[in-house]
Amino acid sequence: MYRTPASNRLHIGIFGKRNTGKSSLINAITGQDTAIVSEVAGTTTDPVYKAMEILPIGPCILIDTAGIDDEGVLGEERVKRTLVVLRKTDVGLIVVEPDTMIDSFEEDLINTFRSKKLPFLFVINKGELQGKRAEDYLIDKKLPFIRVSSKTKQAIEELKEKIMEMAPGHWSPIPLVADIISPKDVVILVCPIDSAMPQGRLILPQVQVLRDILDANAVAFVTKETELLDCINALKKKPKLVITDSQVFEDVRDILPVEVPLTSFSTVFARHKGDLNVYIQGVYALEKLKDGDEILIAEACTHHVQPEDIGRTKIPTWLMNYTRKDLHYEVTAGGDFPQDLSRYKIIISCGGCMVNRKEIMHRIEKARSAGVAITNYGVLMAYLSGILERIIEPFKGGLVKLDMEFDKTIRK
Image (cartoon, rainbow, N blue to C red; front, side, top):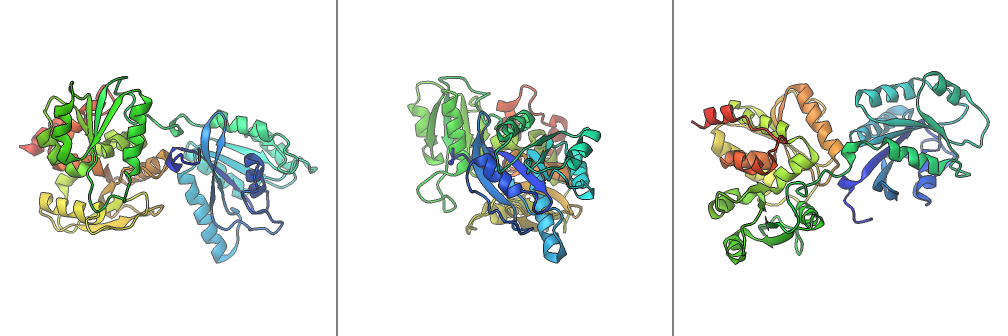
């Protein structure tokens, strides 16, 4: 359970004013002294993430946040960080005390949850205390709530059950490739080894796809692009699918017979974590780029930058060669994502293997609201290599749609 990637866990955000018992509630749910508990208001300063498991949902992350009523300049910054957690939250819990007045702080949260279509539940904590002011308010407003006690463990199990009921369908890992292969199918994974690869292991997207293939009772072969032809020749039957790192598209395309289905790890994750159709539509914005246009390259994790870093070096080089334009680039990493996207002509996202789908969909929705095209690494590289139609072919059946007429027009 503890090795389950954070991106594959249900994210449960716990919000509320200072000293309502948010940290105590986490300790009660986990059955551990996970969060620091103090009578001093504002003990939790930055969001704290705790990996755990709630059966039968499975691996989850509980996010303890600073009080939404924190004060002062530093307090305002803490509140901003608390609200950023909403981008990753699948289920929201708003913690209040029995006899406190629910006011604009909680009402703002309610409005935010509703605008984001995020399921939420009020948790009246410290249920061993007297008072029904909060409960009366919630009943009057017809808002969902449960009364619990972190101290006595009253209704903690019922709270877990309610969390299970609220869990949205999108949080559970969408199949990577298990839905497009069958038991006993042969799938080849092409994993180049270069200076950007970590020593002694594969990268997370490759490992996750490999596990998905094994879970589907299919047969996986892993090779580098330089041994791909040897791998194909050693097989008794044609592979059902070949999945490659996008950076060696052209090498694999030249080796692989045209009748063998081909896609990439980035394309798999574009469907798994985001919206592949949006990415496909977004990539055509490359044809409208002009000198001086700004491009945002959005990485979802932080990593040691290599000399041949894909986001900072390779993609800008490929786009310069393709567009022949003087383009300007900004790279963001980890949780950083600009609030104002209006100055960008296109956003190029990584595969998002280290974050959950909620975060990626948040970025997609922000881009669409701002009227800015967005695509991802795999779709971009397939487009530049002239094989976009081929790499999305395995996911047809109504799942993706290529703008064929536009594609044919711009390729003439």
